[in-house]
Image (cartoon, rainbow, N blue to C red):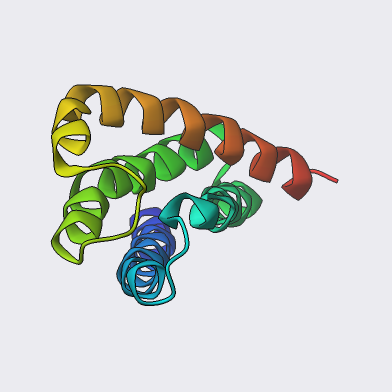
Length: 124
């Protein structure tokens, strides 16, 4: 049963990240604001995933779950925002210079920090 609950929480996180990436990309282009302003929402999702998983399964699972959602955001989420032409403030040449490995490593670190904060909140 452990796997079912964890998978459902991670599916929730991946779904929320997908919605933010899709709607945020379209809105940033249409309303001419920097897509980066939506970063706090993504960070909140990593925190939420860490919180929800930690409540039932503990710190290690919370960190791994947050990191999986972060890797999804760094890969599929990135591709979705590029495909939907998010207003990042960068031209295509600069976007191409941000490598996949850099994005994944960065997002794992960020997701781990916010997953840990979620765990900390869950322990209060």
